[in-house]
Amino acid sequence: MTESIIYTWAYNNTGGSLVISTLLHIVSNFSNGLFLLTGMITLEARMMIVLPINVLYSLAVVLVYGPAKLSHTT
Image (cartoon, rainbow, N blue to C red; front, side, top):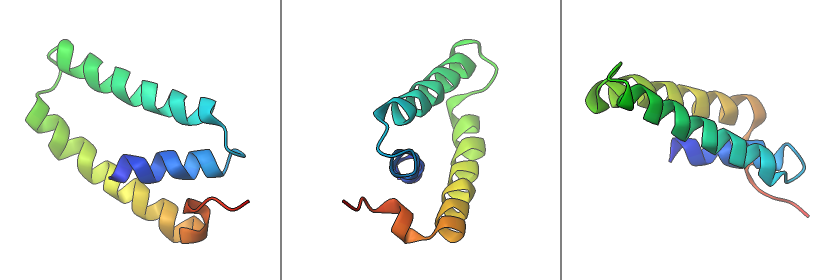
Protein backbone atom coordinates (compact mmCIF):
# COMPACT_ATOMS: atom_id res chain seq x y z
CA MET A 1 0.00 0.00 0.00
CA THR A 2 2.71 2.49 0.89
CA GLU A 3 4.59 1.95 -2.35
CA SER A 4 1.43 2.55 -4.37
CA ILE A 5 1.16 6.01 -2.78
CA ILE A 6 4.73 6.79 -3.80
CA TYR A 7 4.25 5.48 -7.36
CA THR A 8 0.95 7.35 -7.76
CA TRP A 9 2.50 10.57 -6.52
CA ALA A 10 5.46 10.18 -8.90
CA TYR A 11 3.15 9.42 -11.84
CA ASN A 12 0.85 12.39 -11.19
CA ASN A 13 3.68 14.85 -10.55
CA THR A 14 5.63 13.99 -13.67
CA GLY A 15 2.76 14.68 -16.02
CA GLY A 16 1.71 11.05 -16.17
CA SER A 17 5.12 9.61 -16.97
CA LEU A 18 5.01 5.84 -16.83
CA VAL A 19 8.78 5.81 -17.27
CA ILE A 20 9.41 7.37 -13.86
CA SER A 21 6.91 5.14 -12.07
CA THR A 22 8.35 2.07 -13.80
CA LEU A 23 11.92 3.08 -12.92
CA LEU A 24 10.95 3.53 -9.27
CA HIS A 25 9.36 0.09 -9.27
CA ILE A 26 12.40 -1.51 -10.96
CA VAL A 27 14.84 0.10 -8.51
CA SER A 28 12.72 -1.01 -5.55
CA ASN A 29 12.52 -4.60 -6.77
CA PHE A 30 16.20 -4.72 -7.72
CA SER A 31 17.45 -3.35 -4.41
CA ASN A 32 15.18 -5.65 -2.40
CA GLY A 33 16.28 -8.66 -4.40
CA LEU A 34 19.93 -7.69 -4.22
CA PHE A 35 19.90 -7.46 -0.44
CA LEU A 36 18.08 -10.78 -0.11
CA LEU A 37 20.24 -12.65 -2.65
CA THR A 38 23.54 -11.49 -1.19
CA GLY A 39 22.44 -12.46 2.29
CA MET A 40 23.05 -8.93 3.57
CA ILE A 41 19.62 -8.94 5.16
CA THR A 42 16.88 -11.45 5.89
CA LEU A 43 13.31 -11.06 4.70
CA GLU A 44 12.10 -10.44 8.24
CA ALA A 45 14.75 -7.79 8.90
CA ARG A 46 13.99 -6.13 5.56
CA MET A 47 10.33 -5.88 6.48
CA MET A 48 11.21 -4.37 9.86
CA ILE A 49 13.45 -1.76 8.20
CA VAL A 50 11.78 -0.99 4.87
CA LEU A 51 8.13 -0.95 5.94
CA PRO A 52 8.50 1.86 8.53
CA ILE A 53 10.59 3.87 6.07
CA ASN A 54 7.93 3.47 3.37
CA VAL A 55 5.17 4.42 5.80
CA LEU A 56 7.03 7.57 6.87
CA TYR A 57 7.84 8.50 3.28
CA SER A 58 4.21 8.00 2.21
CA LEU A 59 2.95 10.06 5.14
CA ALA A 60 5.40 12.81 4.26
CA VAL A 61 4.20 12.84 0.64
CA VAL A 62 0.55 13.10 1.73
CA LEU A 63 1.24 15.75 4.39
CA VAL A 64 3.53 17.90 2.24
CA TYR A 65 1.74 17.66 -1.11
CA GLY A 66 -1.77 16.83 0.06
CA PRO A 67 -4.21 14.19 -1.13
CA ALA A 68 -5.02 16.24 -4.25
CA LYS A 69 -1.64 15.26 -5.72
CA LEU A 70 -2.64 11.59 -5.43
CA SER A 71 -5.64 11.87 -7.70
CA HIS A 72 -5.44 12.27 -11.45
CA THR A 73 -7.18 15.32 -12.87
CA THR A 74 -7.77 15.91 -16.55
